[in-house]
Length: 486
Picture (cartoon, rainbow, N blue to C red):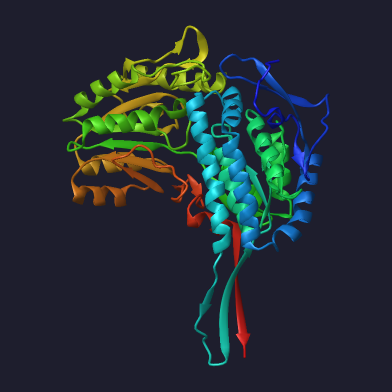
């Protein structure tokens, strides 16, 4: 098993964190966590089941009574300390993240800072859970609106951002006065457990923040969705799994936040700054080896600039360095596992069979079967699987278009609607296209849109609810109307 050297060794934990303690663990029931680059086992983690999940829910229920009555200022102070501890341990947290997830270390450090920013933001928002007074409908009536925490929350988080996808859910929940049970991905549980270490050190009381580690996702998910104690489910992951969780949550009529799959268009109009568009395309497509829900998926380029854009795009990705995320200068790490490579490779083969031209890449490196070359496919068409599939890998298909109406129709021809991007300089067109795109987020002349201060989320089958910004508190609060006769 890999020997991991950290400045703060206690950040490495291998068992679930429930009710303020790390479980002793059952040596007969564990799952392994491997480094995606080397396939070397880096940890054996305690494998929780339904019993431990019930214990976590019960602990969160007990802790709720004292946590929710703290003032916003008191909760804010604790969250602020957690934020500071995360930044103090940024290097170690990034190392853990890269070892279990594979992304380049520089990206991992960026994710730690990004994840911490949600805690800082919502630490401040905890002080600003404002209600309203409404003019009464009768002379002797006064109407007040207050906001209260929804209660116990369950969060199910993915492997592609194993730090930030947790803090983006936990921070607003705790700021609002909720308690929470987190089930991280079985591929990347170590980042979640490291956050729990620092949460405890920051003074977050026992039972307020719980981490259930498991590879029994279906059974544990069923406990979380069926529990009458759990009042809200927050999930980031695939659309098919999100639909299952929605159905399961219906029986107890839970509040739900769903951040599901995407199929982001990246449009380049004829009046775009091509160099800037290429720069945005590289950032949007190849970050985290293309394994993000807001990655550009389909590149629509006006026919008059398609050749220029493609040539410059190819030249740009030739500068990217693929390899071990721990190595200096690496910009693209491995895909998370074998089946991810098979999925991406199948899309590329299908595209070539349907007339696509590989402009660069199109295969794994001989040195490592999980390292997939940054790939560009020209002459793409809507008959290809990658037109309707979320690629989740470093593959960029380029489609040519002629008119604004045509590209809007192509861009919107998908059941999901998370992120979208376009480049152009005509102000009238910018307004028209931004309003016409059926997506929850639109990047205009930028390929990077994720930020703490803006509402993150999609429409259509990309989910519901928003994370980050002032809107991020809404899903963790109930609105209560008080009618007072005087």
